[in-house]
Image (tube, rainbow over all chains, first blue to last red):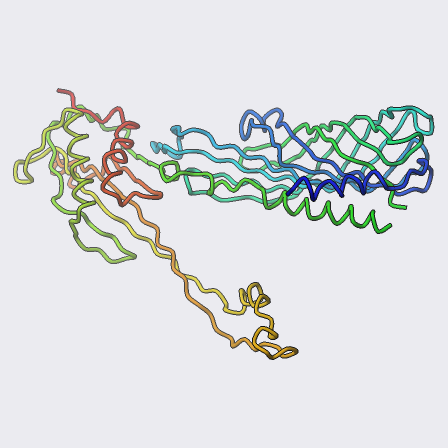
Length: 207
Length: 211
């Protein structure tokens, strides 16, 4: 049943405008995201990849090569560690299953650069950069006992990928790419939730 | 343009679905995984210097500031499990009148928290399903009297204390030299008593006699 519902959605995407990418156009990127924790986030909190993510960009084409706008998203990280012993105080030892759960919501000012923008090529490479707020929620449990910390901190993003238009000069097409996300945290000895996310989706003009 | 709004709407719905797909840690725990075993010990104590122990014949129940003694099947199971673990570590059970080196008590602890929820808080969520048309009074509104319901959450724990009776006279006090605490789902079960007590002793390798 899910496939039947999704199929008209794909047709809808294909039918969307085939106009040339041009200055003044507003476009939207919608992408599924798979993320891998990096650095201390991977070593100290969650090492598992996250298949639960989505990104969305609303961008304004300044020219055929430059776009600027807003980048949003959501990524859910989770890992349950087998029962182990933890020092939880002076001469206190706790045996518990440790569960870590982290959600990251980026709210970024974003820019994209298409070096081959305006040229009739089958694949348009791009690089992107973003800066803004990383809204985070970190929940940690020993067994069923724990609590969460929410916050918002500086987030920086750098990315690269390709845009594959459906037709010559079409503004609608498939996007494939990856972003390195630096997400500051700085609570309870945890420094960051840095991660790299791989994304695939569509791009289409809004007007 | 309509198609584009449809795309955005589909994306919004998809995002909402992703949020709802967030892995909820507590929903991914078995009863065994929900439990924690906490031990505290006096690092200055040489547990090998103690040889005998006595254990209370009932359990102290500490229930929200009140205390009384009890002995049900679960209590017996925990007392038996502690006896087995202590004897496996080389300690000898003696009567309370035989000057045991160690005293052991087992406790059940209950902590109840109370809160309230406004009736009109959740009426809005499900009240919409019962449109006034359902009752034959289309166009009418509902009036929700201001009221609230009380909810209570009781959390239990099992606590085991080992007391230094051997040096009580010398010190002029009875020191608690070891404490084990068990919290989580299914702890008040006869079937889980042995494994729960075993977990406390497994993480307390120093707890053995010098014999």
